[in-house]
Image (cartoon, rainbow, N blue to C red):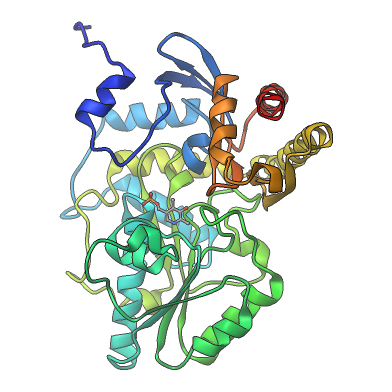
Length: 405
Ligand SMILES: *Cc1c(COP(=O)(O)O)cnc(C)c1O
């Protein structure tokens, strides 16, 4: 191996645009739910690369799929199709409501495709004034200009000039407010079946069923953004399967590739036909390497063993948080479902989620935040129970440090 330049955290400030504020720790390798930094300090991973690493780090099934495909063919573009993409599409459609798939490289791109498809579908089947898109305050759908505008956080979409139009926001779980804005001019409703970035907010059953019924009443497409909730994260393959509500379009990314960038938009044949030849596309979408890894991840996650395991591990996490809270009294509640959980800080610790995340890292635990008041956890779906208890012990030390400071 050739001699490589020495890399330090300071280099980030010199050579990277300043849109992120990464930790001072630079991980260099991982195995399962453990990660090691440049100095060989070990960390337990309760963050999962923001709900991406569904099978932890360097899972053997994924390493095998990637290296086998790496020795066959890497990239073709959509001028030619490829075997891994078609196999993955077949498995996704067999396992879900959908008949057809569009591949992208990220969650935002998958949502962009869904929104563009919805507008085309409305134009093809109705008229140009059926263009309204309804979405929800605090929602998150990605960072392209269309998706960030549909997302319900003005702080992310302001400051870039004129926004895409005909987008309306209402509060999540407020069926009356939703009812007041939907009409025959609504072309689509984009919603997360559990708000992730917005604070681990679960939909009430009446709300999500009411949204479906009103979409049907007004011939509007219901788009489920399952970028964060999909691929087993909540204990079912996709969150919609547990809600008793089927969307018309669904997007999936994050855990889909288990750490390799890929996203997908899934829908029915009747809707898909509006994406005629040439209407939309992507150079990398459906790339053989990404699809080969995603197929292996999908096969591994889509088993009762792993999905039931998520529910069992959720119980361990909840018990761990309850024990810590009984001692230190820092949370009001633990929100979320499956292995997407958020510990909500109480009055005394408002605005300090990041402090908890940093303190956890100091104790050798990778955690996340969701806004200023929630410490978020999105570990591997197959994290060993022993790593959960060791991680909890480290989290307790971090909490104790903050409480006793
Ligand atoms: C992360 C996320 C996205 C954006 O995905 P990217 O891969 O970062 O583009 C979109 N929707 C939801 C619900 C997400 O959690």
